Amino acid sequence: MSVRRVAVLLALAGALAAPLSACGSKHPKPPVAAANTPAPASGDAAMEASPAGSVPPASPPPSGIPTITYTKAATGLPADPDQSSMTLLNEGLQVDSKLPVYDAPGGQARAYLTRQISGVDLIMPVVERRDGWVAVLLPSVNRSIGWLPAGGWKTRPLHDQIVVHRGAFKLTWLRDGAAQQTWTVTVGAPATQTPLGRTFVLGRSSLPSKVYAGLDVIALGAVPDDKNAVAEGLADAHTGIHAWYQNDFGYRKSNGCVRMPPAAQKVLLDNIPSGTSVIVLP
Image (tube, rainbow, N blue to C red; front, side, top):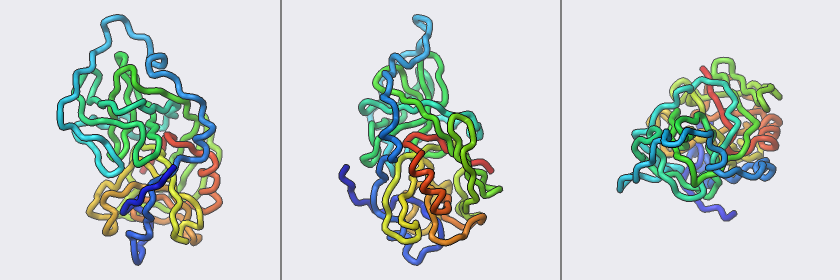
């Protein structure tokens, strides 16, 4: 996959002398584990059965609504109703082409979703099904969901989950609900806290700085809660999970990212595909 240059990728940890260049300049690449993901199922076949006539129709999208990108979110979409839920989100959704996303079943279209975001397959965890519609977590906006009618998308199974406890400085990797490993990590500083709530893995990127111990960074759908608080140049950045070159864990001192021991980052890179849900708890 060709990689295009961008100004900023991630809201990375630490007070770096040159935060813009230290954050890297490449779009995330698909996780290695994504190649082993089972083939997607048709969105029509995957929908729950609904009685005839009970499915609210999808109204035509109004003109002028935005397309969600790596740096552009949308407004008017509902909050995630279960932001602190640790229930495994075991299904990921990818649209077949550009589709409108709605604020409720049969509601108003607020934005467009695309098959890829910054050249990476966009796989969003499914959080709810209702009245023949399906709701997913959204990228580039925190703790928000969007609704899609049947058709025009496919689903695939998800087995993994990442749980971060900010107060305990712990990150746990689970598979099919069973804890696999837990590590001590460093999280966001008091002024730039790691965003709470549910998000998901967008992809990963190879960044040149030695502070990442030569390992790829995992980019998340979450963005800084306060874009004015992060280091200069990171306002349009995304939160990430990455290795750290020093044995400096168990603190609140990053720009919002989660710092991992290099050995732990290797485990995640080998096992975590795009679409994996991530839940950050207080």
